Image 1 (cartoon, rainbow, N blue to C red):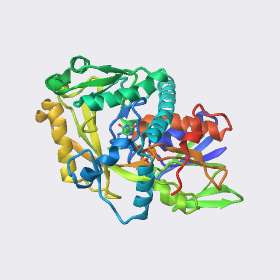
Image 2: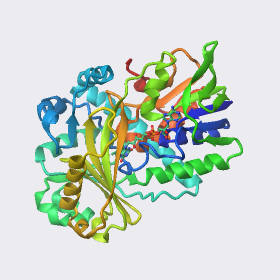
Image 3: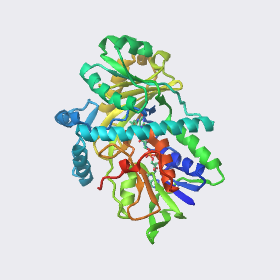
Image 4: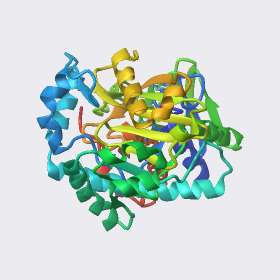
Length: 418
Ligand SMILES: Cc1cc2nc3c(=O)[nH]c(=O)nc-3n(C[C@H](O)[C@H](O)[C@H](O)COP(=O)(O)OP(=O)(O)OC[C@H]3O[C@@H](n4cnc5c(N)ncnc54)[C@H](O)[C@@H]3O)c2cc1C
């Protein structure tokens, strides 16, 4: 089959790679001028397969009043008149309970662990360079209460055979010597040795190279998809502002922009931007480059060494489609980074970036066939886990297209109507 993949972010490119491996011809279509230039550009670099609990959790609702007014906390909400904001928020609130959270976490864990397997296969097969390191992940907590709560979700991962353990503050400092200075402030942490880090945009470039080098792979940049020629219950061709691309099937993987595109053909998905920020300290001092990937759980900030650079990412702002870098938010991130790694005081000014996580209300990506068009497939809504989940999501979509039983039950990744 000739399959059109819309989007050359990490989700579209992993999809294209898996479809080529399955023996299909693939054309990737992207509006931008290259691979991974939207949300996949400068994310936190975490491959956190076992740390997937969604934002919709019981404790979030009690924090709402402070979220509405805080300018420096890890989460921020600015209510809007946009009906999509309200539809999304109502569904989000419905999922802020222990049962829904545990159910989503379990499903995300199964996809995360499958993703890890597919990534290992990919790494063994391809010669690629994206500053990948099997670094392990250490999530540190200052609050003993929050650490105890985290220990409960650890049991879910251990139950699936994925090792995670609670460690005390002294072990945190042994696992990551750069944390030695703040060890006395820590209640402890959760260590997951199987996690990794890497540069998502570099992986997008590598995947694009592999697609381009394949006899049946093609990349079309600068082609904005404007709609579909859909007849007889199937997509006949993908419409772009540069002309139509005839296809036998189509994978929609254009992140946040999937919502308006799918609406044109009566397919609805509920996505909303969860804005975040990152800093990249180029050539960071060695003592400010952690050996394991570190997550500061209280502030929801992640730290990853990418080669000689340090990537810091955090903040989850529900503030609509505002692509500006807010000075106060980026300053807060800089302050937190300098607090955890004082050696950054002598580093060059970091590169600042903001991106929009394509979030679903329940925190699970949408991996399913279109409602009305039998050859249209959705691989969207990966929120804050797109780098982590992309390999597994791409494989299950490729399997489903081929009529094979995917390793992960797709029933857990259906859309909520928008
Ligand atoms: C601050 C921050 C930190 C994060 N940290 C992590 C992390 O540590 N680990 C992790 O796993 N995830 C992380 N994420 C999430 C991750 O970055 C996203 O889930 C992922 O990048 C989404 O990839 P995507 O391919 O779906 O979307 P995108 O990367 O946004 O790609 C979509 C592509 O579609 C194209 N497109 C859109 N509309 C059209 C159209 N009409 N026609 C043609 N092309 C179109 C765009 O040009 C773009 O290239 C983070 C996100 C943010 C913002």
